[in-house]
Length: 151
Image (cartoon, rainbow, N blue to C red):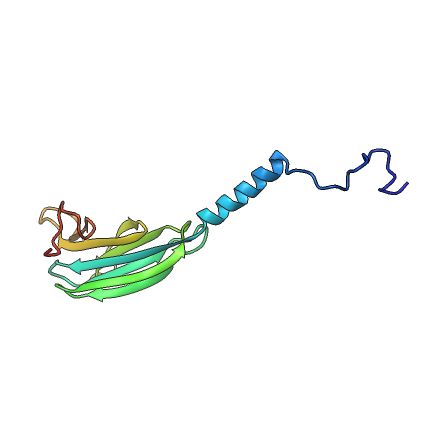
């Protein structure tokens, strides 16, 4: 018996059927996956107000793989820099790492980044603190909470 004359085949089975729930769920999941794995853009503005040079690194932390270094900049005291824009998969976390440029064994301060434009100031740490410096996130430009952009 061939497939056309099979007793389990109903007459008119060759005609198209409306999509089933399983098919709709599969299509919906695929569409969500495409949306979730889009790209995100990161731009980081940094100012070094500390009394020492620092190394600033931007890293893309890939899931299950080694981090990719997207930028590495040595900043002298008083220097300003804009790093980016970087377009990376939205699923890959991004980090800012800052360490004392004169001390290759220092532990870098690590800050998780959010997509968009982020602003940071590097300051000297308190005299009684273990860390020589600290990284302070500033509000976005135009935000009146602590905007030092001179607007």
